[in-house]
Length: 267
Ligand SMILES: C[S@@+](CC[C@H](N)C(=O)[O-])C[C@H]1O[C@@H](n2cnc3c(N)ncnc32)[C@H](O)[C@@H]1O
Ligand SMILES: [Zn+2]
Image 1: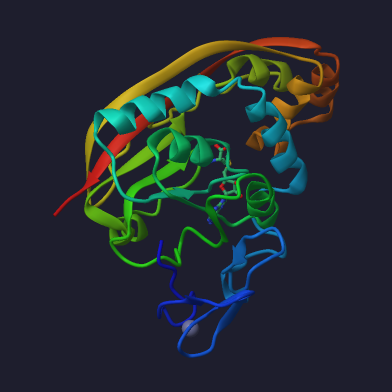
Image 2 (image 1 turned 90 degrees about the vertical axis):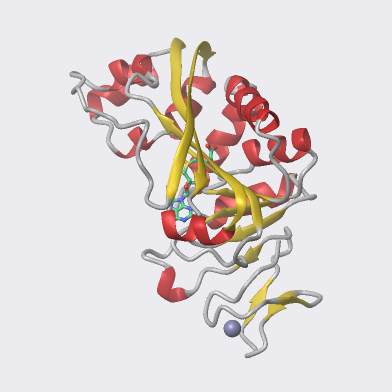
């Protein structure tokens, strides 16, 4: 996928150890193979996005295959729509989904995440894709360059997604549903508050073609209980008692519940 400079938006050219634009803005290619295209102005903290601990927990959990049904649904749906061209996975995390989609469809992948730890982890394992540390708010890739954008349990940036998608491209959005990981939530919170969640949102500039519910049960044991917890946003919200109950939980049977929304850009 053609990269553009995050400062002046001109095309970037690959040199041996850096990407450089015509105005000589230069971005190093890290030893692991990812490129850091996040400018200081785009950082709202010193280490934005998921932490190393979250990334490693997510890797250990996903690699064990508990969420394989999500990959299967993504692949099945992409084939059904005859997706072609290049894939851009926004908020790609440690690369589990993007790499499997890319291999399953035989299409090139670019993964993007604001967390340096996440792209470092992705680049270390999946060598045949391009990995960018960048913000979804200003995606440093050329217009009309993606046949498929995916954002899985991550954010949606309507204008940027529309700019980057080819006119015949698709956007796959996966959102957690209200009953996602209810088992985990009922261990860590004394009371569950009912929070209305819109899992079939309207996105300006896009038409929703289909919404596919994904729902399945799985059982985790021992360290995988902690890994599951650490990869969720609950890690920032848990109280003392909840943390204690979680430590005492050795086996957890839970339900993953999400929605896959398929969008096309409006002409
Ligand atoms: C819940 S995780 C999902 C990761 C991956 N898609 C998965 O399902 O395994 C959300 C991801 O979005 C990333 N993220 C948060 N804000 C972002 C931003 N502004 N631009 C790009 N990525 C962002 C986080 O670092 C994190 O890796
Ligand atoms: Zn530049």
